[in-house]
Length: 124
Length: 338
Image 1: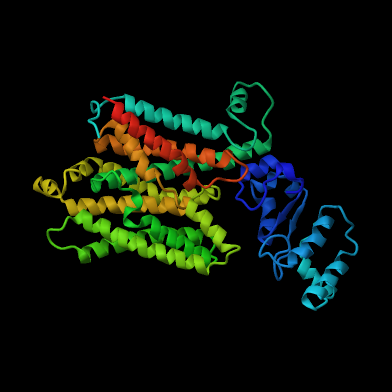
Image 2: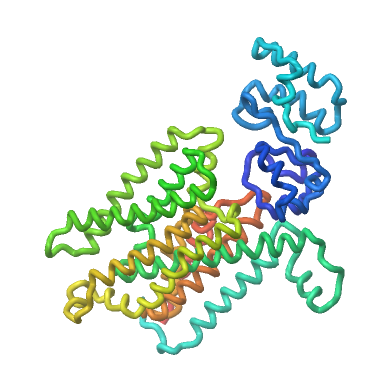
């Protein structure tokens, strides 16, 4: 959850009813299957974010960008989240991510490699 | 245990049904989403604005299935507990005495470690509970000698196998992925109905309800087991067959509910006591009263679990936190009573 006060802090199991009460602007999923099934799910399809297609899938290769396991990949998440939340422009994101990969993993992914890495991280 | 009122006494039934009704209404009208009984009432009276779609989703798709799940789990665990306490002639007995919870937990933990889908985890939990109790019955048959108290051998075999299963669970926890599997295992062992879908609830009901009917049909015969082994046999009661039938029925019901809800302790121990204090020692009344009170109790606990905080509070934690004061109060009021 962006915007602190309404959200739960840390990791926790939240009921679907609580999610409906929050009706978030944006959902970051960790499982691409969830993002694919949310539109047809009777509960999740009632959310504004799902109806508007604002469901992002956090990249997980080789480690999660926002959640697990805790690793240097969270630095990539720090580049990605401001773009997802609209605080920074999307231009140049791919370049910055490739740069950080070169620094962390000593390999600079080209555009063909970056696309599957990002997946559905930036919904329209 | 004091003698209960007349067999047809209405008050215990009235109280139990009232508790159940109150719990259902409270569960339907309470939750994190702002829709309550007042909205439904004004809708029924034709006043006020129509409810938004999300409110119907909450009532119909979220709260109602959870109410059914809590009623099923609470009634099953309490009925199994009442049967076990009568059968073992011990007020400390609970449905997990013969290892059904430990076996179900091991099955579920194994399923989580193997990354099985939810249905696989539930199936393994159900099967694990049945296999564990089957193992305890087999062990007791091997270890028992002529002249032993058969229930004592059963209990000891249950404790022994329970310790073994606990060790296996601990071992699997050590091997589990600490970031994804270990939290899932922890949540499962503490119990929750947050993830129960309609399909899950239907499957658990199909597996549990027939055995609850068996327990209900056996209830007057179970009275005879409370006489003790020798006295019951002297009366011509087939104690071995009767005991096995009750164990099988209670185990199937408990295993199905554990597969649905995870580890929910304390209900099977506490609720039969409440039922006895309300209705006396006669199982013909205690068993159905336990079902009603167990359903009401777990429904109340689950409503608190999903409503008290933004995150779900594990059921197993709340049953103990809310059940302990209730239990102590029952004990205290029993001593002061007539």
